[in-house]
Amino acid sequence: MITTVTLNTALDIIYSVPTLHIDHVHRLPGITVPGGKGINAARVVHMLGESVTATGLIAGYNGQKMQSLLQQEGVACEFTEVQGETRLAITVLDQQQRTQTEFIEQGSSYVTPESLILLEKQVEQLASVSAWVLFSGSIPEGCPADLYATLIQIAKTKGAQTALDASGEALRYGLQASPDLVKPNEDEACAWAGIAPSDHYSEETLDGVLTAMLDHGVKTATISLGKRGAIAAQGSLRYRVHVPELDIISALGSGDAMAAGMVTAAYRGGDLAEMLRYGAACGSACALQPIAGKVDLQDVQQLYQHIKVTPE
Image 1 (spheres, rainbow, N blue to C red):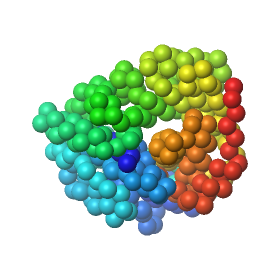
Image 2 (cartoon, rainbow, N blue to C red; image 1 turned 135 degrees about the vertical axis):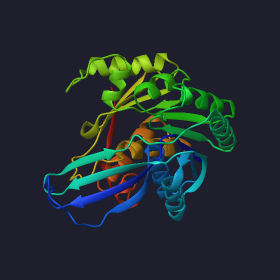
Image 3 (cartoon, helix red, strand yellow; image 1 turned 90 degrees about the vertical axis):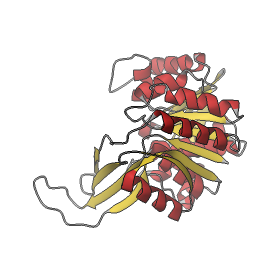
Image 4 (cartoon, rainbow, N blue to C red; image 1 turned 120 degrees about the horizontal axis):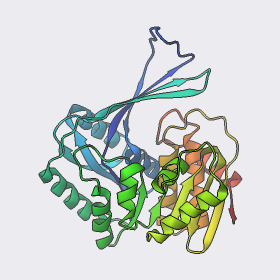
């Protein structure tokens, strides 16, 4: 089994408009789906046909609705409930301009020390019956900055392999626990390494970041590059992922789908090249959908044939 951990869950509301006009009224149907990076990943793992359980923190009416919708999709849930309200994340897709505008609440969940103890026990129990535990997304206000590190260590003591897909402080502290797999995007990875933001990072810079992550005890370090694919390192191995050009509908959740695909491939016994190829196929397939964390298996299979993974 694979477990995903989402500390900052969300209820996603997605609107797609032919053209977004500022200061105008738009009347249109919306799509409401469970959200948060780990939730998106859990949905993809389920669609790929593997057993998965989603855990993490939920709060209030939004949290209950999110859990109910996720269960209706067939994804097993074992969340820790806290006080407050799970955040809303609103996305507006402009079909003509092909733009994606997001409005994401900070969230108002209140996490107590007692809640954290329950969460730790939940992760410990699930890790004991899981081959992989994937930790994704940001950490809510009020939680210890090193919470991912604590949870990763708990999962590792129970024999599970661990993956981390996060940014900022969550990534910085999480890496201190040496997860087996880490998959930030290039901006997130370079920010972790203390490199100034840029529109273009050199190959030497990115390779140096991969090496630094391995030096922190990470077994497999991957940096996603959006339309340019990805690069990865494992020991002395270096790989580059080449993806085909796509008519993208929404990039929302593509990174989450890639993480889900990589973990699923590893769960099935795939080596690094297979993890990267399958992960890139899932991430690309997600970009063809309007909903984050959704893939069409036929798209995954077709894209898989066109993705190249080459040694560096």
